[in-house]
Image (cartoon, rainbow over all chains, first blue to last red; front, side, top):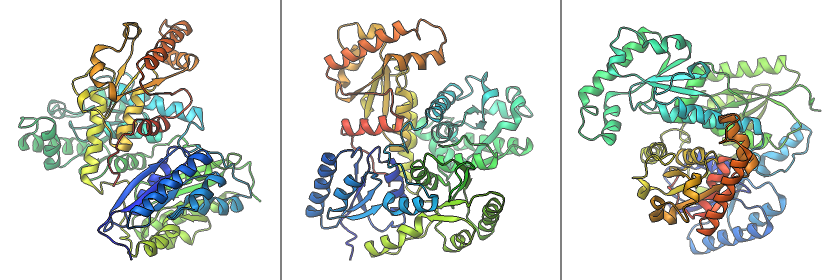
Length: 278
Length: 278
C-alpha cells in the first residue's frame, strides 16, 4: 500500500540530458495527482562507473525513504541498464519496453546510439531551430518589421497576451519563424489593420485574453498603473476581439492554456507545414 | 520486410498538444537511422468524432502507402483510444503500456484527465516559467545587469557562443532565471573579470567554443566581416579560455552539443536546485 503522506522518490535516469525521461515520467505521474513525488534527475549516465554511482544513489534513497523509489529510464546501453535494473527500485524502462517490438516491426536492429534525441543528430535541423530563435528575438514586439516576409506566422495581440513566449516556443520546439506585433489602443481604433500588417494578412494569428486575466498579468509588471487597470484591460480586450472578428483573422483565447497548447493550436489552425523533427 | 526506400508513415496522436507523443516517437525512431519516416501530427483528438476522423486519415494513408503506418499514441480516454487501436496501423500506445502497471504499483487509480502534461496543470509552476522567460529576455546580452542578484546562473562567453538560446531554454524547460553577459575583447584583456561580474562570481558559468565553429556561426550573421574573421575568432576564443581558467569559472565547450545538452550540463555542474516540474 502506498503511503500518500511521504513523497515517493522518483529518479529520471538517462545517458544524455534526461529530458525525454522527465517528459515521459511527467506525463504519467500527473495522472496520479493525489500522490506527491520527490524528483531526482540523473543525466549523463554514460559509463559503467557512473551507472554504478547512480545505482548507489538510488539504493541509498531506497533504504532511507519509507517508500520504494520509481525509476524512469531512457538508458540505451545494455550494460548501464542492467546496473540500474538491479537497484531496489520499481523500474519503468522506455527503451526496453518499446525498442524490441519496434526492431521486429521494422525488421531492422536499432543503432543503440546514445544522445540522439536531444543532441545535434541533424545539424541542418538544429541550425534552423537556432536561426528561428534568433528570428523570434529580432522580430519581437513590433520593433522590427522588415523580416515579416520571412515569417511562418505573425502573432498579434495586446501587450501581455502571451505573444513573445509563444513565438519563442514555436522556434525552440518546432523551428518555426514566428514574429509578433503588439496592437496598441491607437492601432485598434484606426478603422482596420495597421498598414504595416496589411501585406501579411494571411500570416496573421491573433491571441485574445480575458480582461481579468490580463489585469492580473499586467499588475505583476506595473503595479497600480493605468496600464494594468481593469478599465484599460476591458477596453483593449474589447477592441482586439472586434478587430480580429471584423478582419476575419484566426485567433485563440490564451487565458487558460499553456504556450505549448497555444503553439500547437496555431500550427493546426494555420495549417503550417512544420519542418521535420528528424 | 520493411521497404527502406519509401518513407514509412508515422502518426503522433494525442488528446492535447502531441508533444509527449512526438518526443517519445522521436527518441525511438532516431534509433533506426537507415529508415526514413514521413511524419503526421494529429493533436487535440478530444471527441469520438475527431477520433473517427483521425482513424479515417490513418486508414487512408495505410491504403495509399505501400507501408503500414506507425502510430505513437498518448490518448488517455478509453473510447478514443479504442477507435485508433482499430485502424490498420501498428500502434505504440504509451498510456496503455505504462499506466496500468503504475496504477498497481501506486495502489491508486489514475485520474484519466487529459492535457495535464503540457497544459497549465500547476498555475504557480507555469507562471514561474513565464517569469523566467521574461527574466532571460530582460537580462540578455549585458544590456541590463541590475537583476543579476536574482539570477540562478549568469552565462558568460564571446558573442555567438550560444548564451541566449541556452538562457531561453533554461527558462522555458526548467523555469530557471538565467542572465547572460557577452565578454568582449576589451573585457577579456582588463586583467581579470569585468567589475560588474565580480559580485556574482559564484553564479557565473562560461561557454567556450572552437574558433572554426565560431567563425562559421559569425559568418552567417555578418559575412566577410572582421568580426567573423578567423584571426578575430582565434583571438577571442584564446582570451576566453584563459580568463575562465585563470578565474576558475566552471565552463563547457558548446561547439558540438545542443542547447538541451548545454542547459542540463549547467544544472549538473553548478548543482542548481531546479524548481519542481509538477
